[in-house]
Image (tube, rainbow, N blue to C red):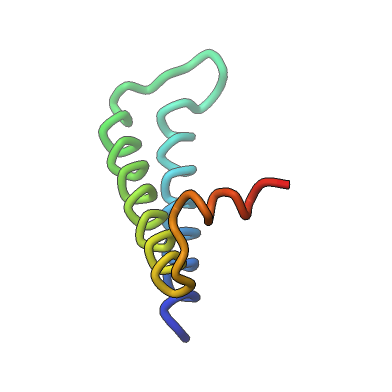
Length: 75
């Protein structure tokens, strides 16, 4: 598996972990579990780190800036 596929898998895994911690913190519209806040924040930070690594890889591989990458996602 190449670096790109591994980075995408890492982003997906981190996003799934964040989803689980978010649901633990906010299990329904009427409940907020403040005891789960630290885990949710850590999972969010890890997801952001993994996304940044993927963005950097894409930009380095294709020689484009983050701004150019962002513009590719727009219609």
